[in-house]
Length: 281
Ligand SMILES: [Zn+2]
Image (cartoon, rainbow, N blue to C red; front, top):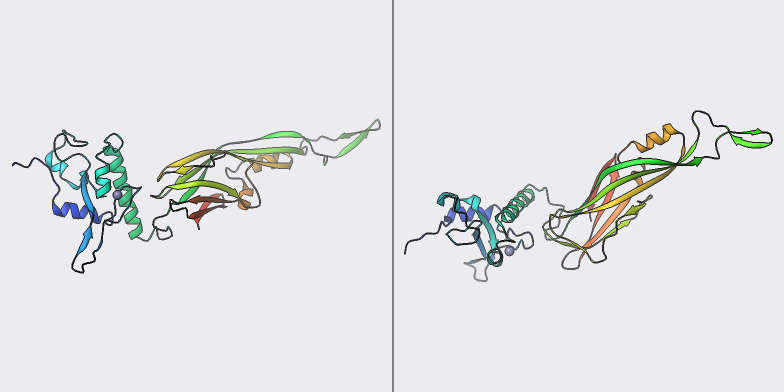
């Protein structure tokens, strides 16, 4: 029987596996695909070098514009465990070529970072959330004159002396996009934002009590911070200007979340020199 399949060579398949550390490339799985067997002379392997575009006509994601060389090249392969290899062929709309290429890229990036020691603070197998704060706008409103303006009495009635620099009661406000990223290959569940520092946001959109954040996805919330200031225009102007309020050096957030084993994880969010710092604990 003629073989019309553009299969991968053994060396291509092995390279595919090595490039992701022999772990399944599906971000929701990441199963190790090779390990010891009870028989000392053997090892067990459950990994498959799967085709992104099918190896033969009529197969999942088959792309007739590709040459046989392209179909059997490493760029058309993704390393998966045997379960996930079956899974991706059950629903080709859900598991499109683009999705599979993203899985592959992320799995290769993660493996390289682990190898370089860049990911050593991250527990393998647990979600990791990070927060970013994106400035949207800032401004101020005037609540009236402060009692600390000088007073003079005219016809027995006290009046504020309003010079060119009156002392005013200001509400200075900042609006932010408060973005929570899941920078891991593991889902996070029941995320809770706790403010444990000296100052607090005035408002952050509430997350539903039961929530989850899939790997490499993000949630965007509205956040507002208000500072009450007593002073002249120059002072108000100065405080409004920084995109991250100077007072944020007192802000500490604790993001609490669970992994799929119901183990708690925390990311602490602080600000230093106007920069956001995320620390996992
Ligand atoms: Zn898998």
